Image (cartoon, one colour):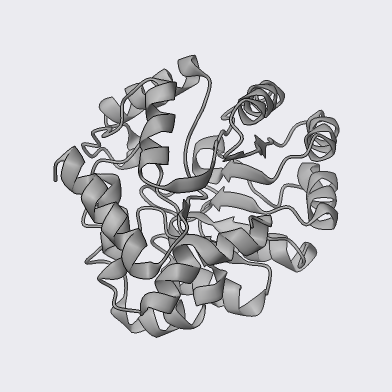
Length: 294
């Protein structure tokens, strides 16, 4: 698909559904040196991506990437940052706050790590107006139910701020990935609003169970149902549950770190044949309600 075909499909998709735009809850904007290292890891086909080729489709400078999203009609997006070691999260939060201040269509995004300083910088992020947090359990290699995070989870639960969590075991399992640690966390903090990235791949059924058990649990579609990720692997018997949970599912793309055109992520949802109302909710209305976007 050419860039022009990509734009034409997305424009037609929005027009068919009568969407005022797309809200993408899973996009990555990071400090340049961090993003270059992330791209280098993808280029090397490292173990965390399953030792598979993963070409970056939108390997452009920051302003070009912003222009691309806006041309696609994306009216709100995130700057998913995440630490892989201590003494990194606070610095990322400072960068992300500055990025949000100069990028009005970006939902102010923050992160944290199990470390003694976490309560202080998470409190500062909340007081500074963060709209969403991001955690990557696979990359950070920590238990989301680590007692060192109890105070943090309590603050986030009380503030009712969603947390995008890459906690499924795809594309490669980690020591703390999978539904078990999340189940433990939710038993202790049942009012949390986690957004399970990638629909919880590959433990789809178990994360759908969690969503049915806890009303605050949301899921994002990031890379799910695409030809690259799992079009043939998602259990089709679960599609009725995906339809029934349509008010709890949010569109995510993983832009710019995707190995296919942006339009394919939307096409992958459309071909599920779950209906126009489902698509409108997932691609715009659910996130608009969660984040108060008029």
